[in-house]
Length: 172
Image 1 (cartoon, rainbow, N blue to C red):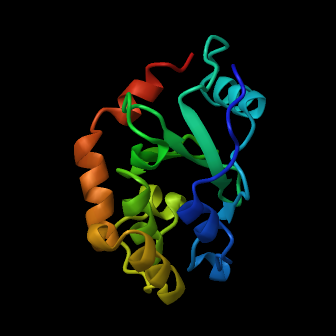
Image 2: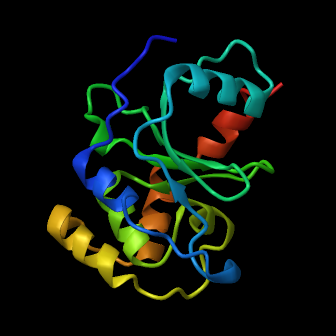
């Protein structure tokens, strides 16, 4: 896989610089990265996750993980669209899988609603506390995209209903 720029978009870099409180399982299980995972690491990961040595991971930009090693990533599926307009997905360490936001703006509002990528996939119906620091960040970077976190999750799943089937179809 060819190398790519590992620099995070400014809004994501700002969000990833904040602390995420796990709060003994009642908070957000997210360990953000300060830059995208390298191309070689991404290729190695997707091959291990799927068991498919033919994949190179070129369609993912990994920017964080949960405590057990599940990854949050941009999924580069919209040709000719900038990175910030690509959906955000989660690959759990135990096979959990899902689309969590349609784009970076929605992702910021997901975070502000107290959800991380893991929580959006594994526990999307739980009431969570608003994170004011992330809500302020989302309001600065994505004011026109404001919506509740559950709406972010619903819209992402509606737009990409076949994501899980597509990925599982690549597994060996």
